[in-house]
Structures are given as C-alpha cells and as structure tokens.
Length: 301
Image (cartoon, rainbow, N blue to C red; front, top):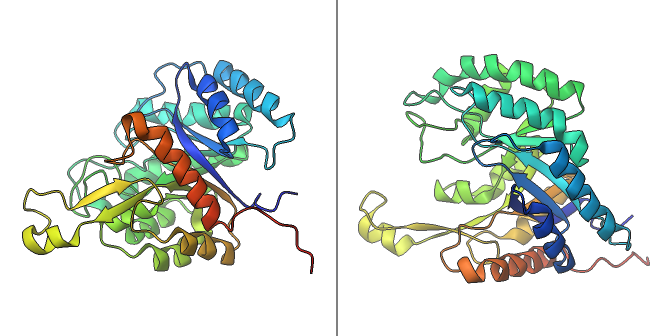
C-alpha cells in the first residue's frame, strides 16, 4: 500500500467530450484523483461512454504501476434540486452511473427555496433527499453537499442552504441518513470570516470530499471600505497562494482519521488563470503534496 493512499491530491475537471484527453495529459503531472463536474446540468451526456473512455485512460496509466493509482473521486452536478425536477433527475443519473466510473461519491448543492430563510427549505430538502439518500444507500454511494453560499446568507439566497454549521445540523436532522455528508473547502469559510480549522475538527467525520480552493482576505480594504463599499475585499485563490494553512488542514484531517481526496478547484484565481491556469494547478499540486508530508518514505523504526 502506498503511504499516501489515505489522502489523495487531485483536481476538479469540467465534464465534456474532451475530458478523457485532458485526464491523459494531466496524469503524467502527478494528479492522483479527479472530480468530474457537470456544471448545472448533465445536458443529456452519455455517461456510460464517458465512463468507458475514462476507464481506458486510467487503466493504461495505472498498468505502468503508478502509486497511488489515480481514480475518479467524485461526480458533481450543481443545479438547485429543491426547485428543479431536472436537477433531481441529474442526481439520480449520477447515483446510478457512479459504479461505471469506479466511484462511490456524488456531490452538488443542497438547493434552496429562493428568497427565503434557510430553515424554510428543510421540509423540501427532506422531500427531495430522503429518496435520493435511499437510492444512494442501495448502490453503495455517498452524497456530499458543497459548502458554497452562492452569495446567499441565512435570510435569503437562490441556490444552496449548505453553507453554515447550523444549516448542516438542520439538514442532517431532516434526513438522518449516514450517506449524507459535506463537500467542504476552506475558501467559502474564509470568505465568511470563519476560521476553518475549528470547524474542520468538529465536522471532519461528516466530510466526504474536499475542494482544494483557498481565499485571500484584504483586511486593509475592509478597514477602509467595509464589505459593502463596492471595493473587492476577498479573492478566491489556488492552494498555496491564499490564507489557509494547508499543512494544518491535512494534519487535522489525519488526526481525525480522515480518508479521501482533496481535488484542486481551479479557474477562480485572479492571477493563475488563462495561460497560467495549469501552471497554478501544478504549483498547488506540489504545494499540497508538501503539506501532506512530501514523498512517502516507508518507516524503518
């Protein structure tokens, strides 16, 4: 067994016709896992064909003895399932298709009743996710809710209630299924001025997947303009370029016995984007591997 099989470092990829080709180009760079994101909708994608082509790419790479053998960590769709029947069908399709990708995790937004306080979405959340949780449990699949606020707050929003611990408690009480958990990242907490480490210590047991995304808060701008003054005061960043202590994050995860993937969520950084996108992601990969402890050396003691 490879010494870093417990926590893999990978990347999040848009799912499209060229995804297997992109994976083939990324594998030699050292990425160990891949989340596939279908955006807001599957849009009629041929999931069996995509799964087959990805299995071929991964199998060819893994036959060379790569350790840990790269894998598909998660399938995600990010519509609003509380108001969109089409998004519910997308969740069902991904749950049913997960095994074809050799994957046991599906993620997305918990959804929200638009314009209403978070607790008013709990009954509809229960109606939608009780059957989805049962469907997932029957197939050995877990469901993870991303902690993105989508510019919403406790009183109002359009997309997602799963952005704060008080909401998580209400969701898991409404649907008390062991397959439901979180897709967590420190970025969304830092944007809300939350210290991610105490939250991580409390919730690691319910986190199924982590997005490798960070944030930088411009405290001097906040002191001068506040957060409603029309001046940008925070940026989403690629890991290694933001405020998060990822060594502490990974140490906290390991002390909790956590296992899973940290997949870098690119395409947000204000600097490492466009022609520097892959440069930034590879830098983040190297950085996160150092935070994980560097190259694994078998214990000699």
